[in-house]
Length: 430
Image 1 (cartoon, rainbow, N blue to C red):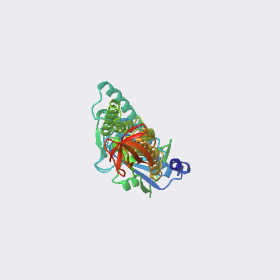
Image 2: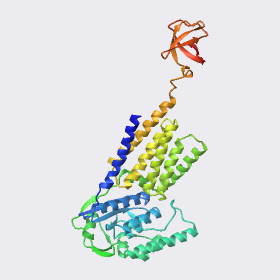
Image 3: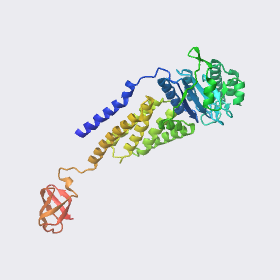
């Protein structure tokens, strides 16, 4: 009992230490001479929008002069794109979207992300356009719904273009007719501001440019800015992977199948664990759940699995599922708060270790034989102390018992208890 109390204290201490940085962190209000550079390469989904939101917060805390988004995307989810556009439009730091490197594109959702920037740039050999909305699997939307979605997206794109002083007619045409243009054409048509060969060239060209920022006009000072690359962490890469529409569909299918199997065949355990984790991740991918809510649900699921392990002998399956859910949930929930792995990992290890230890003790007590009473003697071995023919005396677990046997047994022979009848043991030669 004393050991359990000590482990519980360690759990509480770890949780308190993991939150400590939130109380002692100080925002970097003073601007530093750096350009924060982030890369978004791939499908636009909840993982990409979460990563961008975290990057902009970090840029504000560091006091970065500007944020440069290197963008290369075939498009993605409409709701994730809108989240990213809102993040850019309301950013406390000027944002530059740079479609790069050569051969990259800002297609579909990437069009509105690019246009929403304070400065939009493209590398030579890139293209932008083809923003006609489709379903998440790439198929066309049904006719009636298509008209509603198309009109909504067209007005949304036109509003952003007008606000940023871009070619609103072309943006609407890209949405309604899926037109696409090269970098040179994009500059000529006032879709983007400039063409830059690389980041250094981009910084030179934007230096001294005036932009509309926070209801005022400011001049960008990009001279001699140091480059700070804000790289995606492991959890960011995982979230971007599961945000892919294909992976999202697979996760949702696995979630429904796993929960269905567990409901129809109670006690199978493994399908229920996989189903529960998959369905939460799928709802996050669809942006039905924010990243911190999804993380909190995974942590709650982990605690349920750990507690179930104490009651149900699953031979470690419930604990394994709990560790997976706790790891994913902690990374999603605590990283959204800005905590580092140095505080997250000890929290995961201590909480997991505590419940695994308690579960092991419970399992051990479930499979161990009772140590008192007569019936537990069945199957135990002892030694003959008085010849049994057919009745005699045996010595088992420090006690003398009257014993009977179908065959004579001599003093000193080893015996095994077959049956207990009152205070008499029926034994046989071991």
